[in-house]
Length: 142
Image 1 (tube, rainbow, N blue to C red):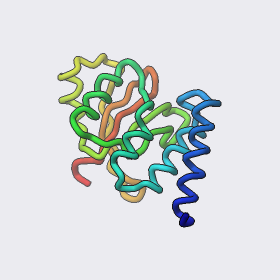
Image 2 (cartoon, rainbow, N blue to C red; image 1 turned 30 degrees about the vertical axis):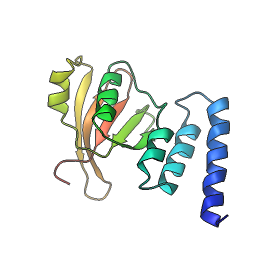
Image 3 (cartoon, one colour; image 1 turned 60 degrees about the horizontal axis):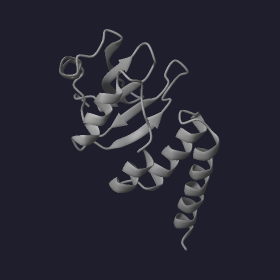
Image 4 (cartoon, one colour; image 1 turned 120 degrees about the vertical axis):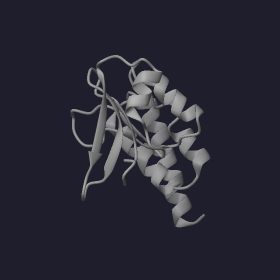
């Protein structure tokens, strides 16, 4: 077994142990999942399996399911940049906040989010201000 394969196997064991011992939104679980996803970069089926149980609040969950059903792939899930964020899920598709708000009749607590950073990345999506969950994709101008 190569070193890379051994690293992946160790991460898979750690993830399985964490899934049995911590709540689904625990930061350590998200970290283990995302580290494994990086090791499996480009393997869409493995990414789908890694993020299959990641959920967001009831306001955003129908949108998450729709994005996945439409072929989007999750590239990251966890607490992205502050304790003011709970679970943010990043996808490999551009997200149209206004279109999603209208299509899903999302409540007022769901707002558009757009960040076009110069050195810290860029993103666009929707955020639930009540639960601090978010669904993001790349910024369309990036």
